[in-house]
Image (cartoon, rainbow, N blue to C red; front, side, top):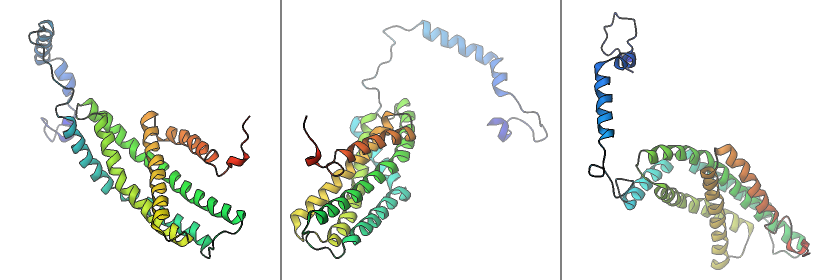
Length: 252
């Protein structure tokens, strides 16, 4: 850096100055090393420095500071948050308009079609939620490693921050999807079934979003997490009661 900005050298001097090499041969380095040896050899229980905690601040202060930072990150990342809301709107409109002339199902075939439409639309949202959180959380995870090594905050603070920051956007995404999908599909205009369906979408989005965070925190990178996620999603689809119906399962 000093060489680049020209510190300590004239504008006509084109030969780069080796600051590190000059210091390695200086008397200052010898004095510094001697002083370090004196400090290390003179350590005892009387001059031992100890702290009550690994971190300089309390857990509450860490959680609040990380939460504010994480909320700012989410607010400044419209490519992540706006995109999933747009996708939720598009998925709700595409799958619900198939049954725009919906009447109460009179046959098992019609009922199965509606169930499959609900399943496909919700699993589409969940897979999108899982895949989109991976690169964002991977970047913040790597930043967290540096911050934790510097003693700034611990694991609980970042878990708290990302959990709370995600919830408003998950609620907004689930609400947009439910408002469009539920009414266009022609379900009962009653509060109880509406809020049950809304809660189902919220909980499912929560599960897959935080599953993505867990996978990225557990493996090397987002690509590996995506591979493991495919297995989890496949298992969830197979044993969710849609692709393989309970009546088709025989107990051996």
